[in-house]
Image (cartoon, rainbow, N blue to C red; front, side):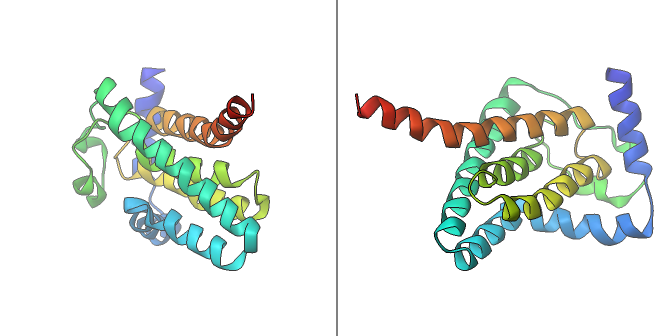
Length: 177
């Protein structure tokens, strides 16, 4: 699996097409500091009525849980170096963070936002899933992560979304006893 992870990283980083050069850099910029997800939440809340506000709140909650778990817990527990700069044939490799590669916090936040909003407002969450997928692709293409880091970030994002929906129900049940 380790070898496949390395092979996929090299192939993704070497992927060069007009589409990649046109789409992935703006996706990376928008996802930086969760700007894309805050913008999506704003649009949801402003245009979706009560459903939009609930979806936005769930998305932000999921994103916050994922950010905390990925960046302050998991990255401290698992020290993994980023892919070697020599593997990345383009300039994006210079913009990588110095923190642990595992898991992808960008992917965790993206998936958590989309997955947490999905039960509340499925069409809006489906629209958010497209850029979330692109964030994961971009993180490998830029050399910031291995595919397994992105997969772990996605799993963490799904778990964070599930927590956002389960914890209030569990607390409410506990308080009503």
